[in-house]
Length: 260
Image 1 (tube, rainbow, N blue to C red):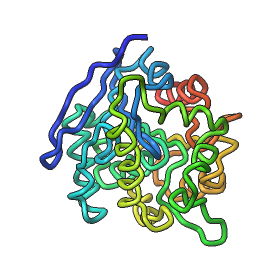
Image 2: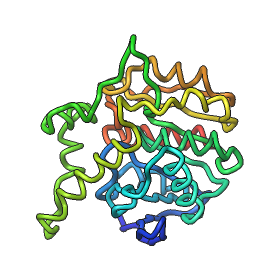
Image 3: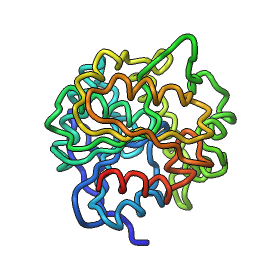
Image 4: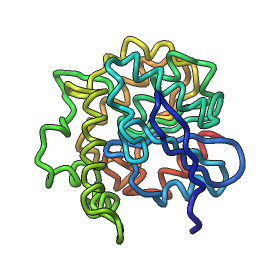
């Protein structure tokens, strides 16, 4: 597989990575917990029929330290809106996973014309104290891979330093991604997005890994009940929270079939 084209855009004074690969209608993707330190097979599957554009969330790998100047949820939303515009995704289809899915949903709520269709993989943002999600920031580091993927080795492989990587900088970038997500979703992954779901008019696909150990499956129904536009729920067999890592082909096919 060929490498994606790598571009850089400025977000609040910080250089922010944007990957681009494929041809066809534009499809943006916002990464899940931990970000994307490297390109993954799921994106190659999407790029077979779409121009896949992957802007890095501020603070995630490729997002430098852009999270450090975002002090409120409004700051985050304005930064994400600007990032999607500069990446060439205004009015395009948007997919997201986990924390990235929640950000995509908020953009679709606050700027409805900016998103054509929405595909969300186990989004954060809601909290039900009768059925709480697992708090990933409260776990020992060695427990996180098994919470993120049905096969922990897949997550470990995503986060493992490539040959020749700076041994000091690489782990700092990975910790920074967790810190950036915490700035958005602390505490308990709750952004009270239920207050904004009714503003989402875009047709929305909700994807859940059947072995998700972070977000209970009931949250798919909670999101679907709150979103104003038409929603579809699909479960990915054999996948954990980050279904796109566990089952790249199946997750990509579900998204592409939905987008049409």
